[in-house]
Amino acid sequence: MLPIQLFKHDKDLVLSGLRKKNFKDLDLVDKIITVDESRRHMQLEYDNLAATLNAAAKNIGLHMSKGEKHEAEQLKEMVALHKEQSKNISQKLSDFETELQDLLVRLPNLPHSSVPFGKTPEENEVVRTGGDMPVLGEHKLPHWELAAKYSLIDFELGNKITGSGFPVFHGQGARLQRALINYFLNYNIDAGYKEYCPPFMVNEASAYGTGQLPDKEGQMYHAVEDNFFLIPTAEVPITNIYRDTIINEQELPIKMTAYSPCFRREAGSYGKDVRGLNRVHQFDKVEIVQLAHPAKSYELLEEMVSHVEHLLKNLELPYRILRLCGGDMSFTSALTYDFEVFSAAQERWLEVSSVSNFENFQANRMKIRFRDGNSKTQIVHTLNGSSLALPRIIACLLENNQNANGINIPEVLKPYFGKSMIS
Image (cartoon, rainbow, N blue to C red; front, side, top):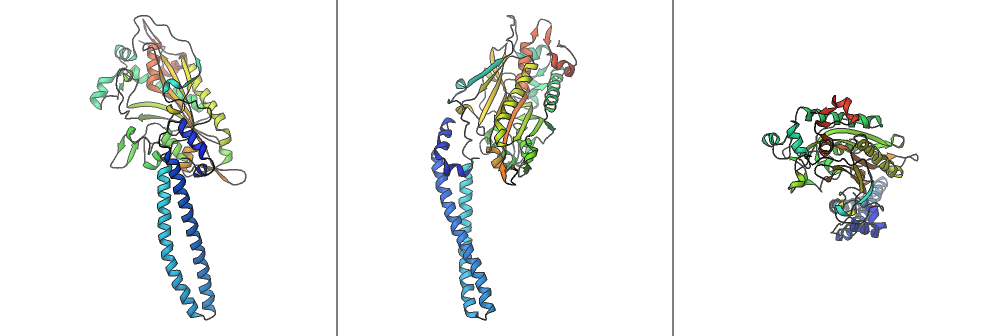
């Protein structure tokens, strides 16, 4: 959530940032400023009335001590009248605060100055590429055919048990999933991230804190009776660990990692681009999250990008890193780098990770603060990244490493998988 002070001191910055993010309802900015001014006037009226009541209470005591009962009774009548006014003003003030909050949560985060202009994925900026592009023969197979050939994944069984988009991994396919999860977690832990095993459902306050609500209700599975939401990523429960917390400055940065299944409705997704593991409703992912000092968050963002990049290098996959344009960024992000891996059989790039700096947007909602050396509290910056999402990584590993004898396992995964080849 954007801080209200920003609207008062730099309205033009807010408007230019919203335009870069391709946000349409710019009239919200003036509405927010108007409601905030009304709230401030009402707060001043309430404070003045409270001061009058406090002074009257003291004078009543003074008159009573002097035996001036008549004057004291007159003041009591005035206090009773003002108390009723105070209740009315307090209710109006509460209404203004609620209205202001409802307006603020409808605005996305502002983009960093380095974010390129653009509205579509085609306008994202390629930062760098890496890895060798595989050369496959004319008999190359897409991952869904390889999964059937080597009995790794059963898409129809998942459809029977639950529905489309819920694949069943079994045998060597399940083993590959487990190998990747363990490797990713160990890699993150060795880099200083503390491992968590969080709940896979969250309450409304947690979903609101990281920005899933009120922006993405339609993309989340909702357990209506208990008002819980199945998590779309471990970022949601992990970041909320520190909701309503004041951290000592010396503890920053706080680095956390977690494995979780992720649940996304992906409403409206259909066609050849969502076949197999390209887009599913339940998938496994390992996440990294950092809580950072505002002065160091962009340095840490680059560190996280390098961290994920080395994972892809170790998996020997061809990749590219994109800086997302304003119109392709998430509601909550200030700057996002996407990682894509080349799928040799499908001959297309598949997104496997996003690494983002949210600055203070999420932390402002969650009231995650730190106490600096002057004992003043400030809002932290939050960052997160996929490290990594498994479905498309598995798709590319299967496709890019296929040969006449089977599917080669990258060197770094062999100790986790226990074999050098799927056959």
